[in-house]
Length: 265
Image (tube, rainbow, N blue to C red; front, side, top):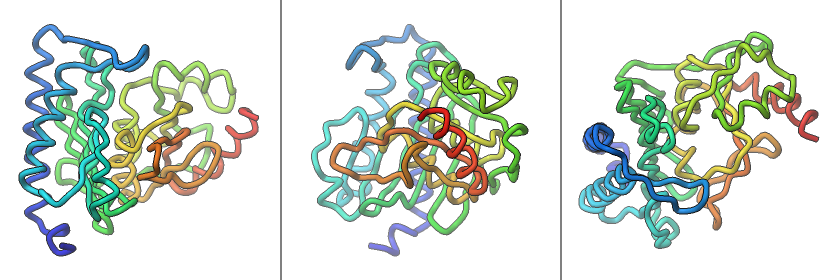
C-alpha cells in the first residue's frame, strides 16, 4: 500500500481529477449561481455539491479502500476505519465564488491516519495548481516554491478574510498598509507557501478540509501552521474543529503569535 501511495500514477490521476473539477466550477460560474444556506453563515452552491459528487465518485472508484471526508458529505466514519482517506473542500471560499472573485480553491488532501501526506489545491480562475507530497517539496504548476524569509513584522505582508480584517487592524500590531483581504484560507496559505504573502491569519474556527491540503503544501515549502493560541494543528479529531490558524515561515510564527496573544488577552 505504501508504494502505491508514493506512486507517480496517484499524483497524476489526482491532479487530473482536480483539473476536471475546476472545469465544473468555471462552467457553473458562467450561469446564475444557485445559493442555499446550510446555516446562517454557511452558503453552499451547486458547484460545491457537483464537485463533491464528481470527486467522491472518482476516488471511490480509483482508490476504493480509502476513506472519505468532505465538507459536503456526511461523515461516515471511514476516515477512522481506513489507514488512508481523502479530505476535500469542494469550494473553499464559497462567498468569493458567489461574488465571482478569483479567490476560491478546490482543496484536496490525502491523509495517512491523522497526517496529511499529499496536498492538492487548485484555483481555477488563476490556473494555479499547487501540489505537495510529504518529504518531496511543494510546487505550483510544476515549479518548486518556498516561503519568504522575512523576520521583521513591520515589513510583512498579511492575508486575511474581509470579515476579519478589522479585528487584525484594531490590534495595532501590524502596518495596515500591508494587510490584504481575500477569500479562501487555503488559497491564502498556499500564497504564503509561494512567497506572495508572509503571513496568513484566521481568528475563526476552521475544519480539517479547510486547512489540510494547504498545510502540507506550506510545510513542504519550508513554512508551518499553528493555532494563534495553542500549538500545532491536530487533524482527524472527533469534532474536526481547529480554533484558529496562523501560517508563515518558521521564524515568524513565534513572533507574531506572541504579539497577537498579548493583544487578544
